[in-house]
Image (cartoon, rainbow, N blue to C red; front, top):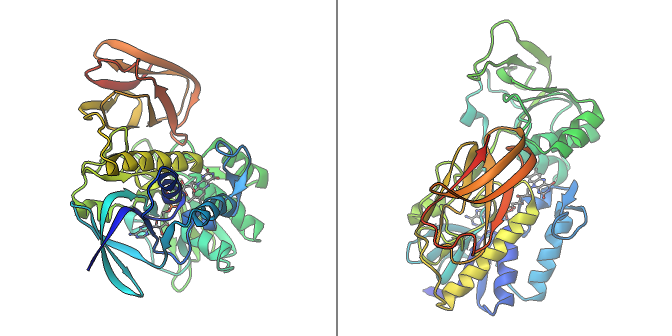
Length: 412
Ligand SMILES: Cc1cc2nc3c(=O)[nH]c(=O)nc-3n(C[C@H](O)[C@H](O)[C@H](O)COP(=O)(O)OP(=O)(O)OC[C@H]3O[C@@H](n4cnc5c(N)ncnc54)[C@H](O)[C@@H]3O)c2cc1C
């Protein structure tokens, strides 16, 4: 039996919950949010540090506090959230197959919003040589064990990767009584926010080894030591620079990968750089009626913008369900010099659009420029640009009027 739904949302993290609330408030009654975990809230449930909601609510909430605001609102609006239920498959004609302890179900959705978040890169993905002892964890798994299950992961710890998750875990494990010997980063700069470098490392005297990587893991049943070495510009280890840390645990915080397996199976076109769907300004993917938002679309550093993306995806899904016509996204947006990616990838340019992007390397006193051919449409000056911080710039519809192409680049 196929069950009809106006809107099916995959994932009840902050993106999926914000989308569900926005759709309900815009008149869509028959909504199903599918969540594979036993509770809604997504990754926020294990992020017990504060720093969430500064943009949206003007206060520094913990992850669970931020999630709770959305869960309470979804409950008040009587939105159906199917927990312990996993979306197994999505077809290009918007059939969604789920699996749960109750069995397998198929839904036919008027529209679908993808909000599946990310998963972590593992040791296998970055090929660290050495033995295969216990004591090697990804940062998210360690965070889940410590913050949710009350299980300590180790006593003497080295962390590889200085993105926000690695930095936050360095502080968390220190507060739980572990000794964090070093945070090791292969790039010449940290890929975390400056506030996290200060509050999570400097305040606790934890060394940050830039341009270094782990070259070996030693130990049989349990990690006994890890060796790190300096890397050159090609990120190859430099002979004679090895340092051996006696430790029992290695935490890997080496990147997130959008969870897009069901999107790929549906035939949705993904962007090679972001790993998320290629979308237009309505966050519609290459399959009409399927939208994407949050970390499954692009990895975010601030949850406030995840929620904003969820709301935009919902507004667009509502228009689709109500058959309100939107412009054809025929204009391609190109990431030019110094810009790693820019989103959306295509636009129709008939409304105001907020573009989000990341730069390739840190720089100071630079201008980001939008141009159509040789014509400059907008310039915005930044005191500092950092790959860790997503840049968002709005262009008004009158600034985009009659354009034929769009390129975003950093003016030297
Ligand atoms: C350690 C850490 C620290 C952070 N610190 C901050 C901070 O200080 N401030 C801040 O603003 N932001 C912070 N962030 C970022 C922010 O938490 C994330 O950007 C945000 O939670 C992403 O929301 P999401 O809804 O896109 O994804 P998620 O929260 O990952 O939710 C996705 C949901 O989809 C579900 N799902 C996936 N696939 C399926 C499927 N096939 N079927 C059913 N369900 C599925 C998952 O179980 C999950 O619940 C942090 C993130 C991490 C990991």
